[in-house]
Image (cartoon, rainbow, N blue to C red; front, side, top):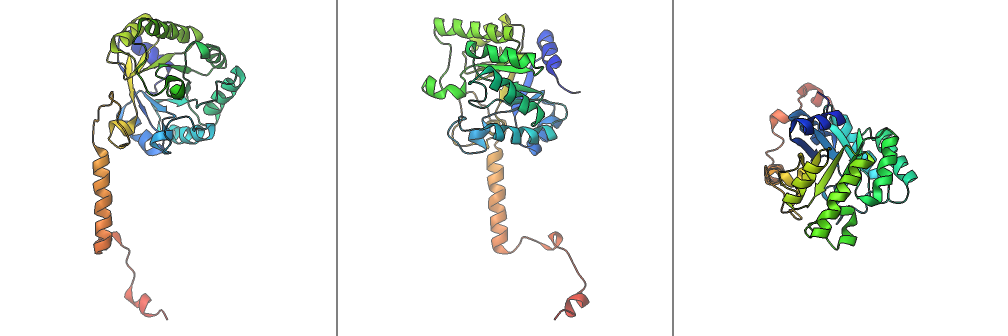
Length: 275
């Protein structure tokens, strides 16, 4: 059954945990969809795990549209949410609506996600008024890495915790149907989840959230540059892939691949007639 914003609302009401994973291409989106994940996030994290940038800031609208279109071709039942990249919505409400519309029209996403609290409520409201579902994102917002001075846990002090709670309320009031809580203390994330009527999707925010999201390269052990504390590796696929690559190199060099079963045959008399 196709997951929608209604699915998210129902899951919150029934206290059913939601699952979300990132994907950036057709093949992995198809596998996740077949496994039954509720939602696929085409994250601007592709800047690091796919394109090799140090952070998400260089990612463009063209990058996001290209990868989102690939994912939506593979996902038939999961709700596909596309990240709005840095400076695609901060500049004006008009830019926010236009760029959100591009992700829907050209990327075929079913919803968009943008980072920020009070400062982006006008954008959220306008995008929702344009009939585009929005996921909010508060706490550690990676596009603000320079302002934060690094990737740090947010909301640890009384003042910071109150601000995050107020921002969650503001994002919900602006019309978001869900909100990502990133790198937020577990007790605060649980409190926010209890206080607002929309689902919270946690990443580094504990089990008290209404759902969870992980970058698939992290949870499969495919990205080795660094591993955040909140990541659990459900499989070390990176090691399996590396072993396969080494096996391929070895067999090619030894001449054992390709073997007869991997080749095509022809009649010898055809070959004998060549000159």
